[in-house]
Image (cartoon, rainbow, N blue to C red; front, side):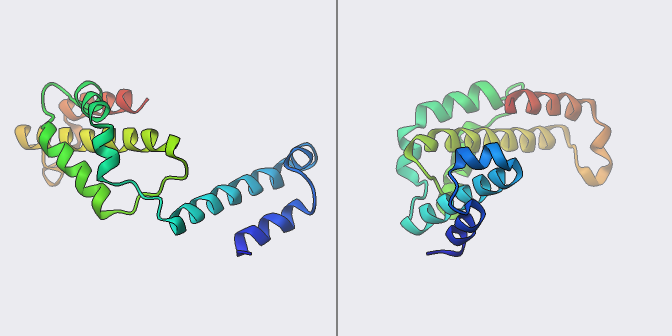
Length: 152
């Protein structure tokens, strides 16, 4: 039995989650958090990592998200963003707990990489270097609103 499982058992003290929620919400949420960590740990041990095949399966969704959610005034380079996403998936061990969760994880990654690529290209095009005091740029302020809209 792992230490996480032991902690969960100690906190539950023979009570069900329903009983725990009714009696002690703080402990209930602590158990929920530990259970989540335990699930992620087990998925890691099983080798449940997102890979290139998952990206290929969801290629249409990825392209749609990048083109429609992250592209700001044509500054997205789709090829670069897709390559960046692939590199991130291959280099990082991104764990998934259930196969249903893969789509959500990949969607978040696609939006993140698309926004980053768009911002990089926007900064290059307008020569917006943070070391040159470009923080007050109205272009970046508008892009930040676009970023918030894409993340919602």
